[in-house]
Image (cartoon, one colour):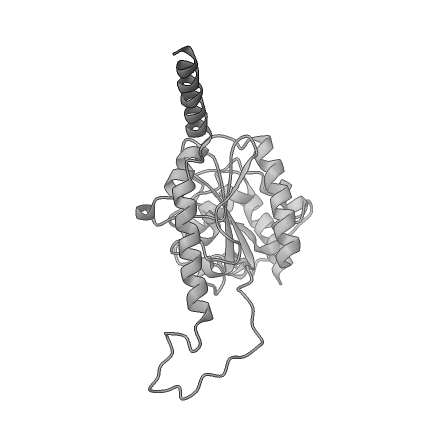
Length: 272
């Protein structure tokens, strides 16, 4: 009888440990694999289902192709209260949002989507002439409620991740941008405390040079300069607020100061 009790107790402990160690995202990982297999099946079809039979007479498969190449990295803050909350948000079909990477406060990274696939992180956005940012970018979400400063461990991990991505996909320094840059009327992430200069010093994003002694020409058009950098200047107030938040770390400023004009001018010169 005692032996039976011990066996049952050990079985209970084994089951308990299994449930504790079980990945809470096992089911959604299976869904990911199922969706990936579905897309792989579509890619292998010859001719593809979306051909127009009334126009196309023959299918001749070219041997010269590859997967999409990401050319931008867009950095976000999650505006949520924990990494776990964000992971749940990105694994629920009804939310219709996702990212390639999520960086937690302790610096750990969750890779959520193959870099060559299209995540739903940018929404309605524009940068330069690009109106479909999701199709050409990698989205990185940093666990942050939108107010607090970013943890040192997060930024250190981010720098390592950006170095890997830049090397893997030959992403230009100017193409490391924030969600606020591509959607200034809707977004303010990453928040005003984000260390953009530290990233730029490491080769991820462009920063302004020393403005000591800089004289801004009277003919300088600050709105056109913002457009040349990449901003959609349809809503000039939102764009200037975004610029001040990012480059001067000033929140809620909708006018461009003289210092701001000098900073914008030095940045604009980098894009000429």
